[in-house]
Image (cartoon, rainbow, N blue to C red; front, side, top):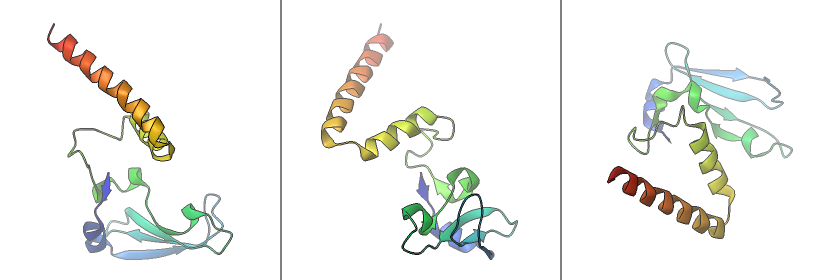
Length: 118
């Protein structure tokens, strides 16, 4: 999923300061559209804040209109939690792990081709 910054920027009609919320101890500015739908937020934090407590952040499931699929809809991330989990593991694994996973995926694709062709 790719965040459409231009669309989000054009749609923003309100910026709301939230001092706290859902376990968050640092302030956030929430960007909303004309119907008060969530677009994204800017989080602030001091030296004690981790990376998720600072910078531009968005909750994809609450801002779907502001995202485009990198696969042009070929893969539907919203219902495929296993694929999302696979990507999250791939992002933190080593090149060796990527190589081994790719071998398994290629084997699976070849098996699909055989099964499709009888």
